[in-house]
Image (cartoon, rainbow, N blue to C red):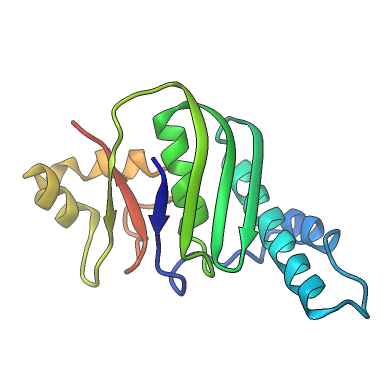
Length: 167
């Protein structure tokens, strides 16, 4: 796939997951560290939080490694399907503070790639389904394609990027 752009200021906040916060605390620098060391520690902390976030969604990924530099995340690992790969890219990219995702994941069983759609103000899954499929009643296809990132068809927000699978 390659390089994906997201809205840096839109997205889910990373903090709130106690396990992720504990992982981030282990990456903390010494109190007298230089600015470069502090920046590097912050990037490692973000990477640890993102890794915890991906793993908490139950997506099967082997050798997951996420590197963060400023607002760019690079993802390495191996997944079973293209769907899993796209979900990981979206989980990472739909996180506040991440503007770019460099996808380096390999896929064991490739399938047709989905398209991505950026949610606009006033959108709903049924409105998006009408636009892309010509049938608003196909919204469950979009909802299912974005689980576990989406927990309800009514909880989408402007700037969020969704997978739109081929029918």
